[in-house]
Length: 410
Image 1 (cartoon, one colour):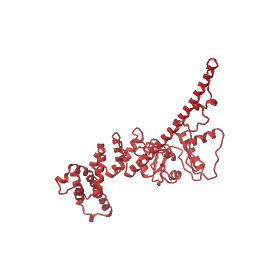
Image 2 (cartoon, rainbow, N blue to C red):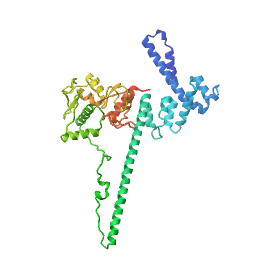
Image 3 (tube, rainbow, N blue to C red):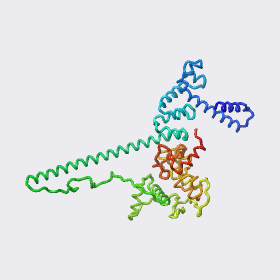
Image 4 (tube, rainbow, N blue to C red):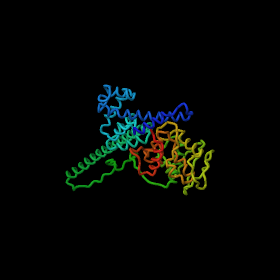
């Protein structure tokens, strides 16, 4: 490694910068600057070893690692203190500690995960350190923290509801038991044979038949054809546009059942934007609503990577030009195919660039998505759930690995 670095430096220094044109000089500065940053990062990562072996006393003419870092690498005292503290925190995590010593990952980036790593999750966090940029990693940690807090709050609420219903059940059982004992005592006193009582809800107000079940919830999981799923999503989007607010799938199903039972939805007089309707044969059909039309080919053609401008406008309009991830107010920078272009490029243009499967994202959230850290991308991004490790079983994982290898985040 040292020989290769020296050779590169000699090659760089042999050039005459004055003889370079503007573009060559800019590229030259980028190469030299990149080498300087890597060398500085590697030198800082070696300082804990220097301090542990006290090399500055044996081979140098300085009296502390701080003087050693300042004299040889121009590193300030504050940075040395932070790196030594980080090295102590990584004492139980040798795999991540090795990344610091080798200079593969900067110390500031490693410091971001010190409160999250465990002995068993080292490899998972190493993958995130290598595949996510510093901004994307910070965003992932923030979103994961918020997700954990929400799950904890929901657990507390569920436990409180369970405790409340359990206490009510215990009270009702006590009342019923005292009622039976009282009856049995009366029968014995009158020398009558025993009598079997059948309690009903009017006597005991037993919670087995509650008048209101509003706080009881049931999780229903089912799968549908892709065209039905797309139609359901469009139905939800129409409702959101009419109500001008975000609605849940529970509200969608309630509205749908009301329609099935003969009730109608109150429609506003505002002009609706262009929408795509997908038929039973999976062929997108152009809707008559709206003024701006999206042209959909009638026959499948080889799709290009370029997203039609009409589709871009439709996707951005749905999210007001902002990132689609929950609670993210950053401007959308990238239009992301949730079904991956590489996996659908052989389909028709309308299927590949279906607005329902294209989400506008900021750069940080797009990097998280391409790390395969989202549980189910084809649902509403407001309900996306982060994963603690990459979903290697997903068909998207291979594509995401190739994308991350191409980008090589620093």
